[in-house]
Length: 204
Image (cartoon, rainbow, N blue to C red; front, side, top):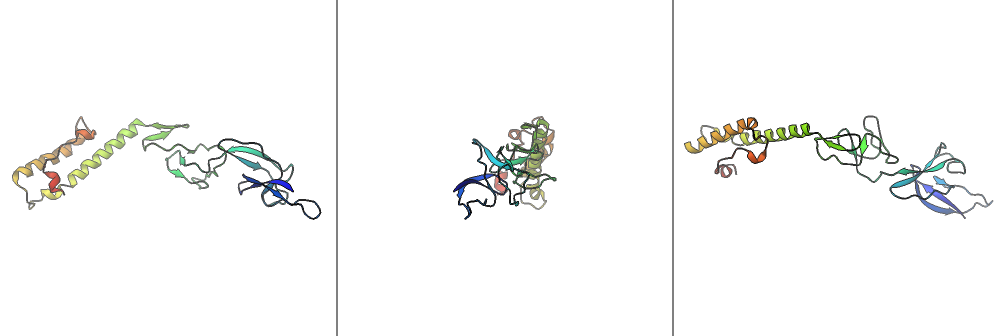
């Protein structure tokens, strides 16, 4: 019996196994097996057989045909693109680049999720871009304002059944909404123009 070491299609160690000798006492290596014992490894690393001999070659894994290397193993990690923060799938090609999950992460990938669209990759971590955050907040508040005005458009039709007092209150509210982006309190959602107390029931 001879102990050998099975690798996967990425030449990464899976497990060890024992093979039986041939009738003449020699050994035939199963496909993807290595005869050289791997070193001890700990942590989030994989043991990968590094060889110039192609995996399909009959001599692959034989004595003196390569060496074991301990490499970082990110194959089970969640990864993200540093330019957009979008998730990355192992083996996917992005802008002509791909990563198989083994070895140090390339500069265009990270295992740190992007906290928000206002964060930019600094080369080692996500950094908040305060101007981008402010712009995003302004845009979101303007979108809320636009929706709030649009939601009451139908009530301003001449034939909508509403008394003069409420129509005046609604008109004042809509004017305040239009002026909201110029307010010193914009875009603080806590300081939004107050809707007439009766409006919520009309919009149900």
